[in-house]
Length: 165
Image (cartoon, rainbow, N blue to C red; front, side, top):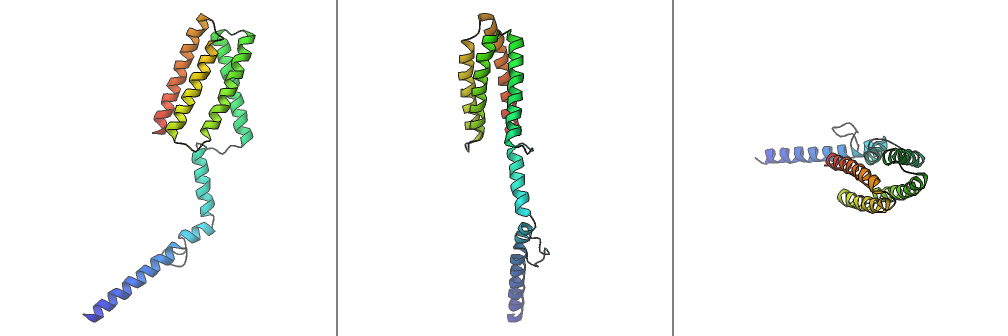
C-alpha cells in the first residue's frame, strides 16, 4: 500500500511540474509554446494588436485617416442637408459649424473610458442639443424636413445599439 501511495505521489508531482513548466514556455508537454514562449515569439504583440483591432472595429487607422474620414462624413452630411432642406448659404455655414463642433464632441466621448451605455447617452444628449440649435436657423418647412433627418439618424443609432449587444 505504501509503494502505491508513493508512486501516485511521484506521478502527481511529475504531472504538476510538467504542467507548470509548460505554462511558462519551457519544455513541458506543450513543447515550449506556453505563456512565456508565446510572449517571446510575439504573442503579446499579437494580443495587443487584437485589442487595438477590436477598438477600431477591425481597422487600423492613423489619426490623419480618422480626421479625413470625419471631414468627409461632415461634407456628405452638409451636402445632404443643403439639398434636402434647401438651405441658403448662411444657413449652410452656420449648420456646418454646428455639425463640426458636434462631431468633435462625439469623437471625444467615444475616446473616453466610460461604459458603452454612458457613451451612447452622452452622444444622444450632444445630438439633442445640436438639433435644438440647428432648428433655430430653419424655417417651418425646413424644420419638418429636418425632423425626418433626425428620425433617420435615430434609426441608425438604434441599429448601432443593437449591434453592440
